[in-house]
Length: 87
Image 1 (cartoon, rainbow, N blue to C red):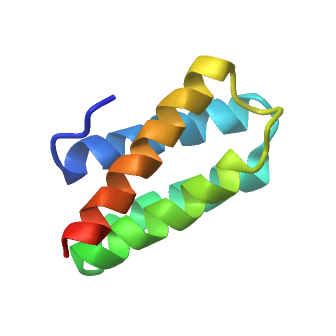
Image 2 (image 1 turned 120 degrees about the vertical axis):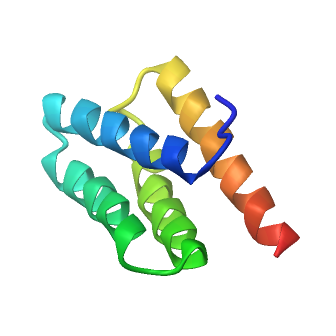
């Protein structure tokens, strides 16, 4: 999944938060959705940072996501890392 803008990251966080919640990972869902809510009130770099932290927590929960979802999450994390290395 190639993120073209912050809106796509915002939408991705909503989707993965809903998936986590549906699978009973309520606390992880809350963490992801809390990061999503930061998009409106803080600078972009902080939104990206909060998103990265939340998604890293999801990454460590190996049994919640399918393999394809996990690969997509890793791709999003890679893109976030690249965004920070360019700054």
